Image (cartoon, rainbow over all chains, first blue to last red; front, side):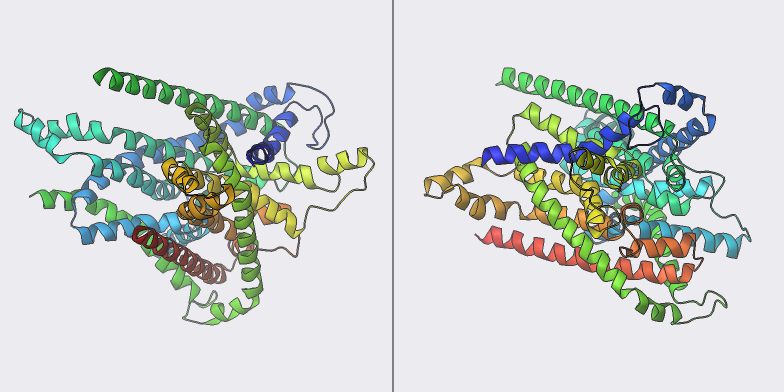
Length: 272
Length: 274
């Protein structure tokens, strides 16, 4: 039984990784066809860095995701602090609102926001070109906010309120107590919320596809329109580099966590 | 004093969410009930929906089948990961997460290269002396694409639940004379129900609304509701019909997640009683 399980797991991982292996191998291919390996070359990587438009698109994606996740993290943390202190009924309303973008399919979120922007833009501002950088940013902030709230809220309820009182008894002003105690306690939630928001933003295709206009496009949206034509192999080179980057980041995060856990258990052991 | 501060801090957020999630849904309703040409109130778009019930049924069918395949493939993997040492667990968890961070458009496109008539799999088959099989543009290819893309969404919640199961419960069941299969059926499986339900929802919702997977891997007979909506907005230029379809999709998803939550809630109560 255990053997069957092991074999199945290996097969599933092969299934998950085969398409990525195909893309990575294609980035070193001399030919254009993904199905045939003609010979090894690094030419696609050179082309990638010569292609200003592709790098600009990656820049656009990074700009939107950094801005959106930053705003959503700050705004969401403040909101979570507020929601935490609300009476239970209002808190329930706030959490229901937070869950709407999480349960709605992306396509409905995208369609509804684009209809809102077009409706308001044409009716109230008489504009034809309603979908801009700003509407895209608003959309990204909106779908990022729930990730921040849902990561910060549990940390807030774990925080002991008497700690803040203790800090104030010891002479902190309420603001000092907030920065020295509360913020410190909820920091892990803020960080994981921010990371989640950033990756969701960077990778989002469906919502961006409906909300972006012609003058500001992100990388996934452009890749979608590429895939209707024959794909340029330098995209595979970009995929390979992004894959390596994310792999390195994930391994680094794991190592940091592992080191932290070890330190924690070591100090706990010494305490006992 | 303190309550006032909380209201003050949360009000901007509540306004933001009302303006950018509730009102847009209202705008969707508005478009669904107005005539594209004259802008007057009409039921025309809703009547036109009659053409699309088949497509909707097909989307639901494909996504339920995909969710079951994800469960079948994902459960053993989640179980395997949950029973490793801490370092291996972390590493395997990362391996499941990693594909989720990479462009799903390109990964789906790689499947086109694998499955097409002159694709990698068929080339291998031909080289081995077998005849080529038609795989792309079939319902099977669409379901494969869904399973491939959303399998991590199944594995992660399952893992989270299985890893928390108290080993002592399993030992107790064994002490009381259960064999391996009985332990699994009577202890482990019932305790993983919340993970199964949330995994099913997390696979079902994106699968039922996808349009890229069916466009790339499907054919003319595997059109899904997401395709139709996308076409109304990006090619057909009938946002009103698109809005009506989005409304139906939204209601469908709310009903389905509602049913799932009901099941989950009921089971939790049951386990408390036991």
